[in-house]
Image (cartoon, rainbow, N blue to C red):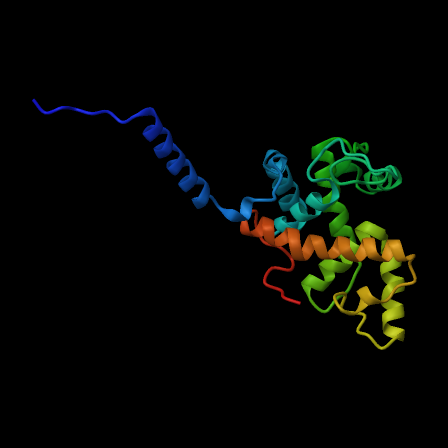
Length: 218
């Protein structure tokens, strides 16, 4: 009679580890770095973006902005008082709610649905009020305004123009000219570059949708 052998426990464990390692190795690398909480709120962001920007809304750009603002934490509160997933200051959340009462109602910055709607609506408001040579540079001005105020973007443009730089270009032009405090300048420039050049490609590669600086290299 032929003897039938069964694999040892050690052999089974090794086989299981090989299978698991192969699964992890084949997993999409581009998902690394996206917080688990992001998927929980993804559909909310997509619906809001489509409602206010259309079906070609730059979802990856908005996702990158939320990532930079709070890492998708709905109860985030900054040391200076910015609130919620999209880090609106109380005065700004009250103002945007008054400007768009039908879409936003009372301001609720700690409510994820409200925060995401407010972000795409405010971004749309800012985007329409800045001019640039292309969509990516316009998105950069939009993000700069979201972070530091649209008034500062205008001042930076005028200073860039007076210095001989192209005020229609944010990257390597307007971004280099400002009279803001050093810490504010560093924060604002890093904010824009992280969103559009680091986080946006991450979300675009993960299948979230298009971004405003997709394919742009600097």
